[in-house]
Image 1 (cartoon, rainbow, N blue to C red):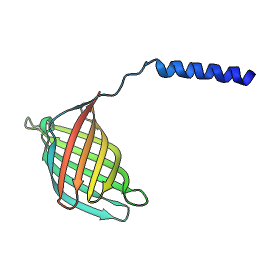
Image 2: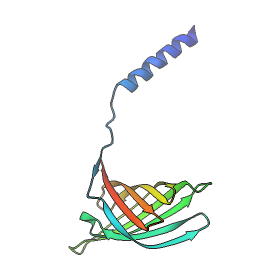
Image 3: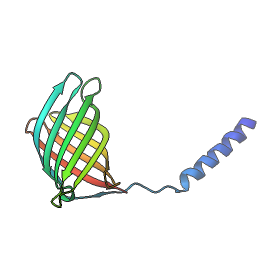
Image 4: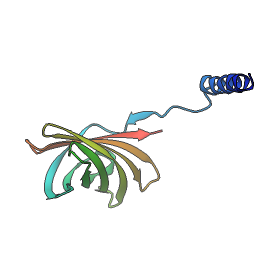
Amino acid sequence: MKYFVTAFFALCIAGSVIADDHSENLVFEPRQDSAPMTLTSIHLNKGGGVITAVGDMGEYGRVYTTYTLTADPGGLQGTVLGEGRGAMEDGTFASGSGSGSYYREGTTFTMHILFKISDGTQNLDKIVFDAATGEVTHDVYIVM
């Protein structure tokens, strides 16, 4: 009986915590239009590889990016580290770095990276690379 009463109170407390929404939901707003990137190089190694690309990315100006992929066993997914530097028309630079994960379907790699930007903001970026065509797109969402 003692265990039943303890379990009952634990469930009641857990239910009230779940029902009581004290936390805020994350919101992802597009920061800019989808940016096509130009693939500049691919360096392969036994455990993954490095992809570099360049493109014009709205408020970040001309952006140079590096994505370092490390494959999990099986090679269909893994982790990714991202670095980016943007040269803006006013002569300033923005920079960002982050980590995330990727998965591969056929020849298409989809990466999701949480970037910390030099101005203190955070972005969730979705990068899609098609190895068959060489196309790279980069979508940026503000994390709020």
